[in-house]
Image (cartoon, rainbow, N blue to C red; front, top):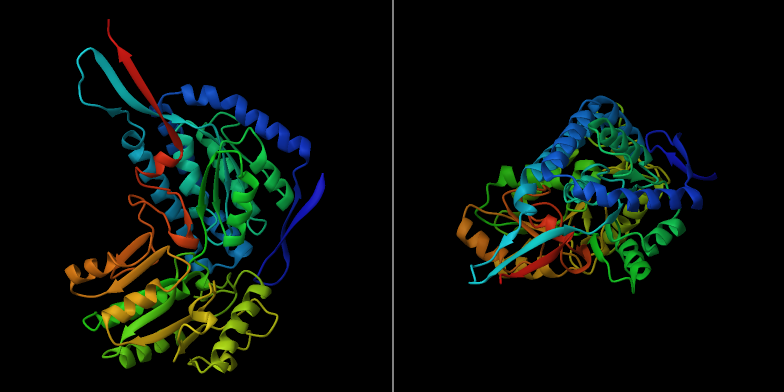
Length: 462
């Protein structure tokens, strides 16, 4: 065994989990087992797959308290909200089970005399899922559940920050009765992750992570002609129009910006507010953020925990310091948060005004508890600024004029567009991004398209 993973808890900087990296022999056995079991698994009925997956969800939910505590310690989410990850997984998994019949049904064609024709969805084989730490179960299940339901088998590589998540999912699927080998996991080094991507026994890659990580995946898979689904970064915008319900807009956007300590791919990182309501919005937003309690994630009173590691906190500190030097106004004093210190994962929330797109904090992904609020004079200016980004995962507008809101949404370059809400993934809608937020699609009936291949049947009757 090669020593590899030491998960440092952001709560107290202690080693919470230690795991060995898989050896080359172990990797080979996992991939061989996956390839061997895939054909018999594909041959099972969809009804049987649905039944076993439902039992797996039951087994997972039964360990809700243990899983929540492990999330809290592995990546720092407050214990008061950590169990929400279990509920979110259940919602998404059960919805994909419900949608499987539609997503995997044959496509019937118009009748043609003397012929019978249809298109069916075929499993593609071995799906390699690479999952991140920030929403360790939700991001993983987006690909895992539809892949297994479609007749594929899955090998999961989870983040070194959240290795227990792979193990808990494995336990749940085994408890649900899935045959050994249909769902497996590997604790891998970066180099071995690349090797698995290049392995001819792998037929599809589902990756969630950074843009550089996505570039690695595409380079490693180059020339293999396999499908790749990428959910990458975000710098998601919100626009508060003059007619918005201001209290609702403040509560929703600030929650979207600071939930999970701002470590959400689809979290709100920049807010544009019409000049007629800007001052009121800013005042209410600052008051909302000041009410957050920064503290240890295992404290039930904590509403905002540390970020995942000290280096991530220092990155946001530097972004904020640079913006203030360029003229931004910081509305939260770090002096009010004794545990916010350079080199610490505990980072005070921050609201910045007088910001613009010359500042990195408005263009570069922060992935931390800071948000810039910029004044705009028109819808046109807001849309131009919303689209002025290398990312396009989600975007939202707050307005009471739904027709105009939808018309503006048609102009926004984004994968998901919201009105009067944000930072939410509806499993009946396609989850996808544009530009550097990635490509491909998970969830909804469309999510089954990327995890299957079409096979056409053309029968001439003699």
